[in-house]
Image 1 (cartoon, one colour):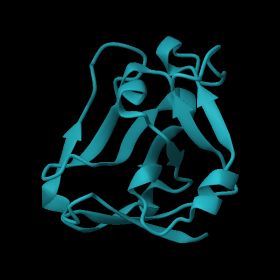
Image 2 (image 1 turned 45 degrees about the vertical axis):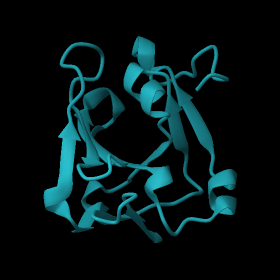
Image 3 (image 1 turned 135 degrees about the vertical axis):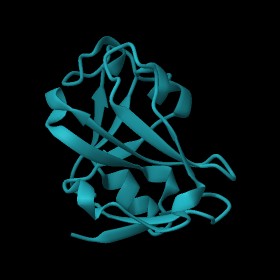
Length: 138
């Protein structure tokens, strides 16, 4: 599986992950994903997500403790605020996972992103396996 590399905007944090753009990417309508315009891909093996530089510059946002997804940690560069990746454990979605925020990747082509399958998730209503009725605003 190809290893892709990403960085934050200021270059303080760097990471790598095994990503396969023949597999689905996802967007969601939950309050966090909506506010951050999330577009991510879940990693088949969470251990393949490796921070290669600047681990001490990463801050984590753990979301609200109430609601359908209380067990996700979203990683950001504390210097420039760039969102990088998320880690979590949601039994309904297969347990422990990591996902990469695709705009943080440096070595993926526009053609790869355009051709990657996209799955919509209705996280706002905890209905992860189905698309929301409206996605144009996301």
